[in-house]
Image 1 (cartoon, rainbow, N blue to C red):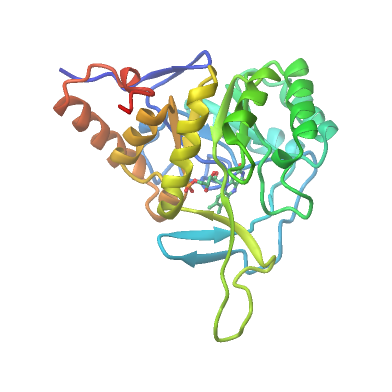
Image 2: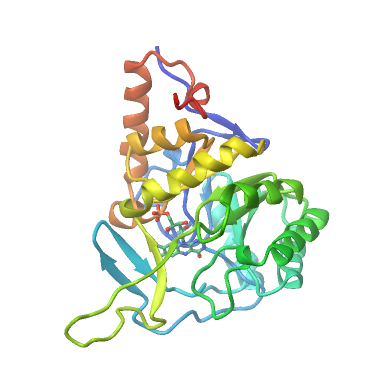
Length: 302
Ligand SMILES: Cc1cc2nc3c(=O)[nH]c(=O)nc-3n(C[C@H](O)[C@H](O)[C@H](O)COP(=O)(O)O)c2cc1C
């Protein structure tokens, strides 16, 4: 018996529950030669903003135990350049595309989605409301702004809307519920965890912006807790994200309540992690005689 690992997610038919995590797979086209795209359920693009952004100064990356810090600062080519020069190539990959977007205010998000609205084949838009590497506070920490962005984007978007949350909030379950009430079709939990590292020889922080976002295996238990808490409160599906690097990690997130997961840092180390992860999941389901992966969603036994 071959188990079914396809997922019907907010109206999108996905071959697998594995997404690329935003910012770790470029715009999606660069890594097509490095991995088997048939193992990827959906590609989430690097976050795109209304105008081009150069990002933060170097150094922007630092390694830490079982993970990494980054302060890329949303470097990107801007939405107009993206739709003119990148989108066609990404759509040729025949993998559902979720475009991640961000902005400094509600109007930035709305204007960016209006431009994307002219294109038919985008599967969904992910609102990055959680970047820790900008000068202003994380949008998730301003509930009025957070709610306003989701409501106004939902009103004009012809695509389903996914809200990507920061773990650095008072109550992730409550904020996920707010996202649901404002019209989000799904939530991604979570973005990176604010963190820092210091070079003890130079006494200087290892990142140009002093603090950055931590990702990789070290954040997995914390991200998992976020998914578990939110699943108790919301009805919309959850994309689990944080430290996932193999099939066991995926199963853990699904048992906690995720319908799908994103893989980021692990794909920077091994771009073809999707292939080994799918193999792991299929083997696990067969051993456990589970016919359909969706039967495991939220099935942690308490
Ligand atoms: C180098 C790097 C760049 C990232 N850029 C973005 C981004 O542009 N937009 C975003 O929403 N998340 C971004 N993230 C966060 C990831 O999408 C993901 O939420 C986080 O890294 C946790 O998952 P992981 O532990 O599997 O990497 C970035 C992460 C890394 C490591």
